[in-house]
Image (cartoon, rainbow over all chains, first blue to last red; front, side, top):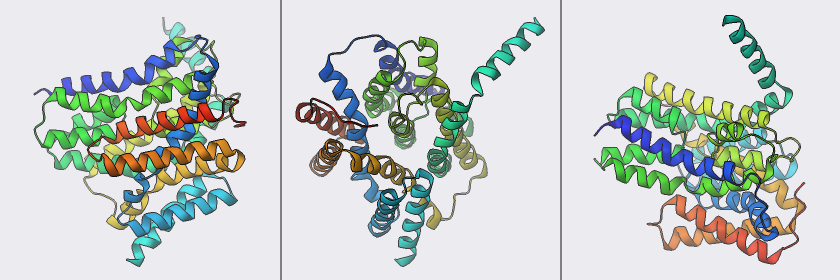
Length: 99
Length: 248
């Protein structure tokens, strides 16, 4: 099997779903409920992307939970993404050290 | 001819390097921090699967989709046929259809198709999440380009490091850094939850539905799980809150 063709095919099937709505939905006047639906997508997607995936993101459940809690605490106090990411990593690191 | 190229170059530079471009780069730093270790892991894994280094690098350059690339390498190791790998990739990445549709509505309708096709290449779970929580006036093409470029650069840098150096980060560090992008998602979601009860409810529905899917239908790919949960949560939200949320 030629791996170049594989990459070509993978490029097509990853690019098309990304590009089609971007170009086609440009000047379409969507009904209000559909606009609302699309407006809610980011929050729904974030929920689905975080959980339960986060639980298996580190070496152990304990470190994942510790990192997650620290990320939530920092996010509640200071909504600075970089700080939250570093805090989450440090939290997970401490969790990994504990086991 | 040379003059023409020079003016073109100049035009390109002056249109690209704008404050909003730099703002996009800056907003992408947490993504980059998460992508580099995953890219390294991908490069290493592809090496150990016996995939030639240039194929791994090309995959990151052209496909730019983390989960799909890992699964492709895995399937290659199991001698799965190309069509099956391509079909799996499509299924995993269909969720970007939803994300691009959502993002598309936030962009200026006057933005050309050429720009849109270029920016679409950089849509990932992470760039989408960061971009769609930006206010509409910030969300111009330069911002998105900056955001996409630093993320794309980090993913490819990670891949190259993994493939060529052939050494992973120490396991302890690598395990801890695995949480990075999830922490970023938390950082994006939590401030919005504080501002609006509808967002909290929608996110909770997505979390519950995704957990139920993961628990009861573990054979369902993560891509489908995310598509189904996201659609269910956003649809219920549309019914419950027809007046929308004050997200800004």
